[in-house]
Length: 491
Image (tube, rainbow, N blue to C red; front, side, top):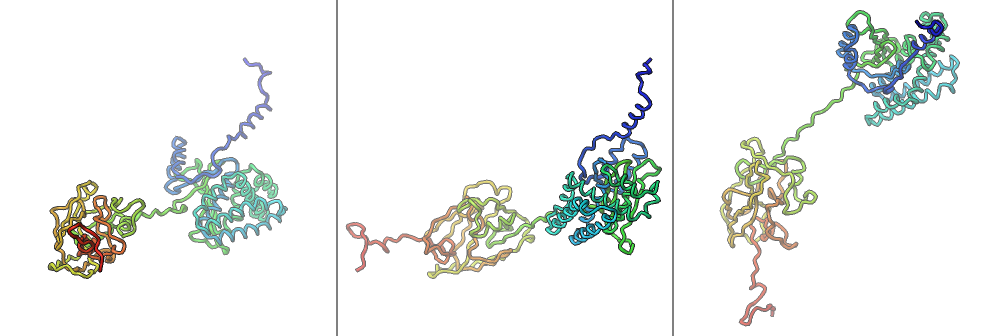
């Protein structure tokens, strides 16, 4: 049997009981957390009392989101202050923020009335004013940073505690200047003593009187409403509303559609609740798929029409718009061709009516083109095939020009009179438009003309429809005698 002398006395029991009752676990987590699904609360109470399970199971259907506040003895004040600034952001009006700063500054009269000079409260108030300035600047610049600024400010301990101290002083001033509205809810009727002991001290959590005072001093004059929902073991299948303040104007008329601030109260702790409509939904516009650009050029055989897969491909097809590092004779990086069995789905190409063969004109000809395109199946477009040739029969000995990869049997075209080409598609006709596939690795430049003759009007230029290669005629530059060849001189 234990020695009675060693047993603790009644005073020691009372002291230990007092320590046990006052013990508070160390608060952890952010001062104000990120918004999250209220289904998290349902999960937290999945193994709790059946009444809590039923009420929390019904919570997400009505209140889609919630936000945690650290339970350090300031969560109620912090939740109200945070939702007040958040509601101002929901309005999204810079002038509203400026009006609120002026109104809060005018509430200094209440603080002066209860004996707090401006020197005592202005340092705390300036943190709230500075936050209003930052939010207004963000809204004015439309940089999308306002919500992050608000959350970062309330997670800064110094800034957060300064704002909380300021709103607590406003609540105390409102209770003392409207004592007749609150005296009946105070046990001994000492309004000033109640504020000094239950509102103003550092570790005093918000109670019904403090919440009601802030609703009248801070929330309702801004045009907002406030309600507190209580999660307890009372009968019912949903949480109960323990406080409600309807948003009204200066004439006490309800304001339709005004922001409503919502708190979730669990014994000893406040969090923030949101309905789905309280949270601005980010509209994700689906990316509009660009329709293929069909470039219809003359003399395309059958139903083949090249399709540019992107704007870059179209730009690459314009002369002079070579991509970096790509020169003549190199392969274009992203040009692809699609074969469509239905010509009606593409831009119609006006067929070219051939002309009867005509003698080679002596003078330069107009800006007509001869385009040669061989259909390539898209599955084989990336495969290399030996280059083939189209033969162009002229009056002079025929010249073979490499044009495109593997065609069917060679296409023989007789040199004809200048022709006019009708082109469809989004591009206007241009004499400078390159032939399809110009610059591919399987095409070789036939020759290089001199600068002053580098014109398609010149019959010796390969862009001329009456192209005739230059030939060296020794009789025109040299004369040959019996003793060999020597330079001729004019007499």
